Length: 172
Image (cartoon, rainbow, N blue to C red):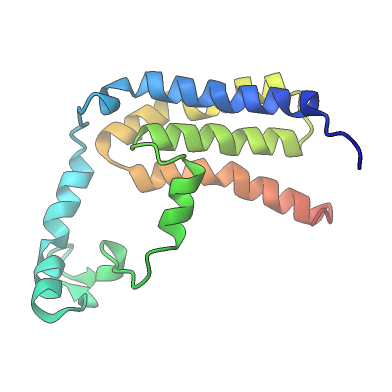
């Protein structure tokens, strides 16, 4: 068996540590117990109240709610899962169980870094690109207003693109 070359993964390990430290420092108030008052998240609590009350009374989530836009399907705003493991658990794994929004900044850094490595960029250029992508002013703005699912989607997008590129190159 050949010896594993730890020197080859050192830049990637350093990159992950850089992303983690910067995300934690940038979102330090979250680790001190402070919470960003996100308007859309507060609105969502009000919009889901009818469905939560229905669930408490009948044990299942309704398929329709009248509390938003004169009525709409509830799976758009609230969805109950029957299993403990799933997409939410995988998201927590990718984000190292960091609290939001630090988790989203870390996720978008990691995701963009993976794309940069699939594109065979220098790791340090990948770190710079990942930080630029993650900490762009738009991401801070959507975090403050509560568009966390939009930020999560934007965080996963580079990783999905990297996967598509690998598939097109037949690197399964």
